[in-house]
Image (spheres, rainbow, N blue to C red):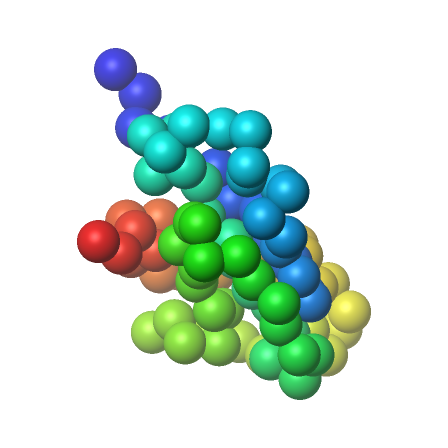
Length: 87
């Protein structure tokens, strides 16, 4: 069986409507990944949230270069995706 995690990448918000129609067990496989600390966030509390700037390895250069959501890729590679799953 695959161990998949789905990331909704956001720089400002992730509304309840995004996850309202999926079951609670499906929500366990969804995570909001927040980028760019300088923007105020409105993130639903129905799924877990990871702040990129709170990770062990974090490089703000990706935001400075305006890569925004694409910064998820190197951060997962450097930190390991299992680091993002909080219980």
